[in-house]
Length: 227
Image 1 (tube, rainbow, N blue to C red):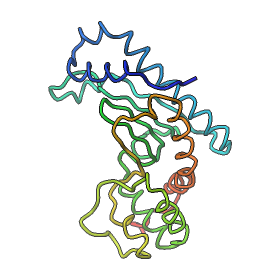
Image 2 (cartoon, helix red, strand yellow; image 1 turned 90 degrees about the vertical axis):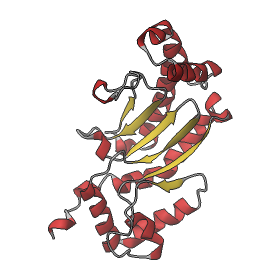
Image 3 (cartoon, one colour; image 1 turned 30 degrees about the vertical axis):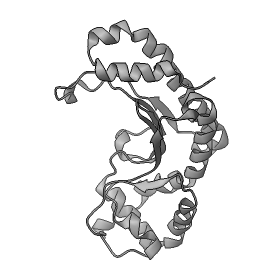
Image 4 (cartoon, helix red, strand yellow; image 1 turned 60 degrees about the vertical axis):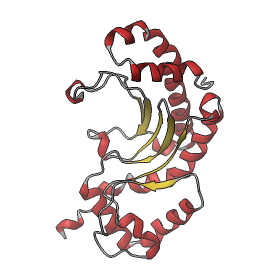
């Protein structure tokens, strides 16, 4: 059972940031496993089990904890290790970055969580706009609910202007998005060092599940660009 990250977790994250090389990592590998990897796996497993039990209809959800090793093709002169870890929960898909997912991330300076896309396809965003055009009330209801959660914000890269005329003023921010996430981020604070973060994530992901269920079906909609 997850009991919280530790001061040693933070020490390791800063250590790998300042000493991003194989020799240092090999000397501190057990610290990584015991203070960073294992607690992240425990937290991920607990949240995943909660969602699977609460939403049995979402039985295809899978959970993945990131590796500390960077993609060797993308090092760009930087060290081979990440100084942060995350877990994600989503449907098993070939292109994970283009599908909506729940996520939690811990780094040496901050922690964050949310729901969104790492890199939504243009057609996905076009389908979102087309669905809001056709049935605006569904997303308006979700958007009003989101406005009541002050800890969560709609974030993501935007076009300079909406790609089409918004169905309503309330929905206008969605029409400007190239990519998005509904997320929360803050400096390292007490919740991540105790079981409080478990309750925070359960509450947040329960609130975000209707959004997930809305977004995950977008790829079943017809491509509006072919209309």
